[in-house]
Structure formats: structure tokens, C-alpha cells
Amino acid sequence: MDADTTLRRLGLADPHAVALAADRRSGSGQTLAVRGCIDGATLAAFPQAVAADVDEAVRVAQEAFETLRCVPAPRRGELVRRLGNKLRERKSDLGAVVTLEAGKSVQEAEGEVQEMIDVCDFAVGLSRQLYGLTIATERPHHRMMEQWHPLGPVAVITAFNFPVAVWAWNAALALVCGDPVVWKPSEKTPLTALACHGILQEVIGESGDLGVPAGVSGVLVGGREVGEAMADHHGFPLVSATGSVRMGRAVGAAVGARLGRSLLELGGNNAMIVAPSADPDLALRAITFSAFGTAGQRCTTMRRLIVHEEAADGLLPRLKKVASTLQIGDPRDAGVLLGPLIDEAAHQAMQRALECARDAGATVTGGERVTEGVPGGVYVRPAIVEGLEAGSPLIAEETFAPILYVLPYRELDEAIRIHNDVPQGLASAIFTADVREAERFLSASGSDCGIANVNIGTSGAEIGGAFGGEKDTGGGRESGSDAWKNYMRRATNTINFGHDLPLAQGVNFEA
Ligand code: UN1
Image 1: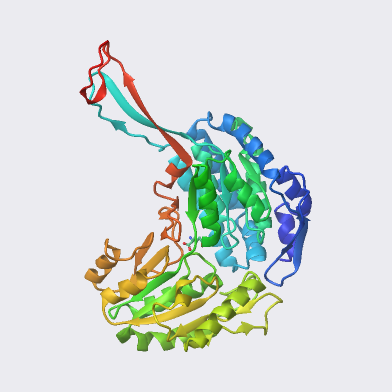
Image 2: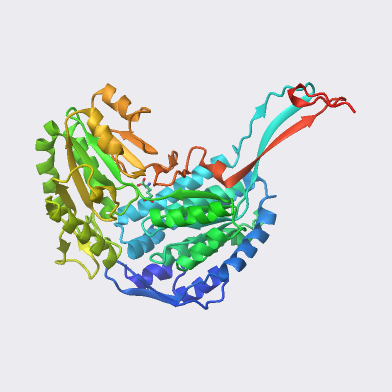
């Protein structure tokens, strides 16, 4: 399908008009040229939002909040159920826009839309389970309980690599929790954002029976200053941001300075330990998907392979063979597993990292640009880097490209030390058939990451678990488990149904 048809199918025949309508903004910002990364061609151009537009977006969201917070949660859930159903109908159309803008293979793009559908289903169930506790009180004829109330408008800042799913994790939960969402997508993938916003608006338009106002969803396509204005704005009690550590530090500091809440999902530097007892075929498949899938552009991408010396000889030649033969090309073509990098800057960052590795005496296999049989974007062969010291500063950095550093080990303690010796703490895995090793890895003295797996790779988490990590990853948890609590405020209520006024802690204050 060509780019125009792909965009037209999602109501984006005139992205300029759609962008201005979605933002409800002045349209006074600089023109943004949106490039598809398959061939680098310009897909659309429209003026960006500016920092001054944030006030209006907040005003609209706050007005919508006044209504939404009083719509019963199961009815809010019904809206999200309809959103999930609309996404089922539009799965391939929306996936095609993700492919066009972010360069994901058709399978992975549709998988990302499936992740949106899954989180909608999860949120629908949640809409009847926003439970508070009833707590025993120390006073006679009293009752103590907690309630979870809607929090207010949520600012959602997302990255190019999961241009639709991460919004859905936030939006589906926020909506059932009673919070409007104002979204600043990556400037690299604004069309997917406008498409999602359009789908949600269509659902709201068809759902007059639910009484949910259109203002519960806004989109601001803009640059860094728009993100900064959102982080600074008191109208957002919660800012949920996904992206680089640098961005997260700035958002965390700005939101913290006004004592707001932030939910940060930042970089990963994810590793897998492969023990001598690991199933070699499973390990190979898991490494291939985790390290090279999505052209190494997931937060959960595996960047370090910590392999036991006994397992390395069997594994590495097979891994190199797979890396050198993976089908790379136009992500719309059947059979292609690796699409392009997002842009030239990503390619330069990859080449710089490989250059530094070579300078430090490492051996690099692969990593070259692929120019034959591909459209005009940036296509690369995955790189495998051997011979760097575990503590090398280069390894401590997350380069958003398919580079896998190989680090051998002898003892599990040493492997865990190497594993945890990076600033980030998102996803991790061990391949082993030894239950002691597996449990040690999952224990308090094992992996220090938010996600720790046994005999599966680091990437491709399901939505049901809490997603996020520790240290420089930012500490936030999104998506499943009890991540919904981020989007609500807790009120503790104590009710006296007696005829006396006993004070807590035995205090007697008779005047
Ligand atoms: C991200 O890269 O920001 O676990 C999100 C995964 C996906 C989500 C990744 N479900 O790889």
C-alpha cells in the first residue's frame, strides 16, 4: 500500500487540517516536515504547537475532567471497551501507519496495535476493580476506608519507537480512572498520534450515551519547549514520560519542583545471562528477537549478552550467522524481519559507538549499512561486539540501534555483578536449566531490574505486568498490575457512627 492510501484510510488525507483541529492551537509554530523512515520521503508538513498552546490544551482537559470524574468508572470502562473494538477493526490500517512512520515490520506494527487492544481489555476489567481497602479502626463505632478518585489531566510524552502502544497504556488506564489525557508524541511520529486521537474521537462521537466529553483527549505535536511547558504546568497533576534519560531527568526535576507526580520510563541497557545448562536453540531465538528485532530500537532491546565461557563457543558462531542472514529491507514486504533505523542521526550514533569499540580494541562483526535492495531509508546489519571490558564506559551507554556487546563469565556471582553494573535497570533475563541459578537471578541479590525473566528474552513484555525499571530507567511502572494507582488520588475516610468522640492514640481532650 502506498503512503497516501495508508494515511487516507485513517482520515489523514490532510494531516495539516487534522493536526490543527486536534491541537486546538494557534498553529503559529515552525513547520514540521514528517518523514517516513522506509524511504525518507516527506509524508506531511504542518505547523507545530508552541509552548503557549499548552495553556489552552490544559483548559480544555480541565473542563472535560469536571464531567469525566463524575461518569461512573464502569461507564468510562465501556468507552474504553468501544475504543478496543474500534482498534480491532482498524488494526491493519493503524499498523500500516506505524510501519510507514516508525519503520516496523507489518507483524511488529500490528503487534503494537494488539498491545493497545490488550491494554484496553485490561482497563475495562479494571474499571470495575478500582478497589480501596476497608481498614480496622482503633475507635469504637467508627469505620475507616479508602477511596480512589480521579486525579486530573495527565500529560503523556512518548517516544518514536512505540508510537501508539505507550499512549494506549496511559490513555486506557487514565480514562477508566477518570483522567483526560493530553499527548505530546515524538516529533518523529506525529501521524500515528493524530490517527489514534482520531480513532478515540470517533468512538467518543459514537458514544453520546456515555456522556464523555470530546476534551478528554488532546494532542500537541511540538518540540522540546512544549514538553517543558507541560512538565511545568500545575494543571497536570501527573506527567507520564517515556524517552531518554536526559529527557527524564529534566521532566522529573521540573515536575518535582512543583511537587507533581511523574511516571518515568527511560532508557534500558538490558542483558541476558546464558548459563552452561541453557537450551541453546531457545537461547539463540530469544537473543535474535531481543537484540535485533525492531532494529534494536526498543527500550527492552537486549544490548548485552553475558555468556558462560562454556556456552560461548557453541552459541556465538550460530548467532553471527543468524545476524548476517536476517532479512533486512522494506518493512512492508513479507518475510522482512528488520526495517530501517528511524533516521540518519540514529545511524551516526550507531557508527560512533562501533568506532569507539574498535578504538578500544574490540572486534565488531556486522554493523554495516545495507544499501542493496532497500528503499532510501537507513538500513543496517546488526552488530556483535566482542572483546570489551565489562566495565567499559561505552557499554554503560544505551545506543538506540542493533548493537550487542558480548561479555564472557565463569561464575554466576560474577555474571550478576556484570549484569547490574550499568546505570539503567529495565529488563533482564537468564537462560538456564538450573533452578538454583534461576531463583538466584530473580531474588533480592539477583537482577536489579524492573523486569527479570527466565528462559525468555528481555523484550516483548505482555501488558498484564507492571512495565518499567529502576535506577536511570526512572522507577515508573505503567500498563498492568496496580499501575492504575498512579492515575488516581487516594482518600482515607474515617466515619464516626456513634454518639461519642473518642480520639485516636488514647488522647483525652475534655475542655
Ligand atoms: C518501549 O520500548 O518503550 O516489552 C516499550 C516490550 C514492549 C514494550 C516496549 N511490549 O518490548
